Image (cartoon, rainbow over all chains, first blue to last red; front, side, top):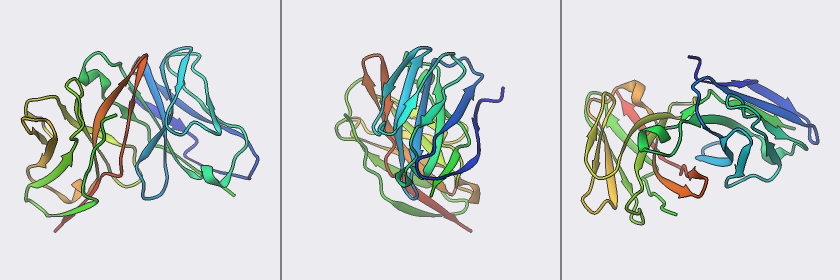
Length: 116
Length: 112
């Protein structure tokens, strides 16, 4: 299994541009998550999904959109990039909530985004 | 929502045990304690979790106090590769899903 994969690894955007960060998992996990991590800080949850067609906001959803059309994929969309969105973005997945081991999250390698 | 408090940084000598504390005084009865770590620039990695009893796996041991208000992650023989940020997390439940709150964590420096 490849686990959780993310593309691209690094991207530079101009203010006002848009882009989609891709995330895919091959573990048949129900839950998927998007986090951002600013330099020297912990992770903050942007959005999460409990299954195909179902998404919900996390701590810092403003400026982002998500969709979940399949179990495997959970793309994150930035519509109008701003310097405040310069960060490292991590995607994660987990099996579910029924039991602690199934809630363990598996993380992708991250996407580094710079908005100038 | 239950929150955690960890020291910002700790040092440990290579080959010695690293004991990382975490306070979670508002934890509720059905919430688990999870530990993850993040080695520089990589995605966080699961280490261990527990509810009430002490737990051990191939990576670490987790000691949870009887009142569950604090816990300690133990790396029995720290190596240089264990230098990382360690996150103590309490799972927060929400209808239809859950939200995991990652704090600032403890930056562990293992020194030769």
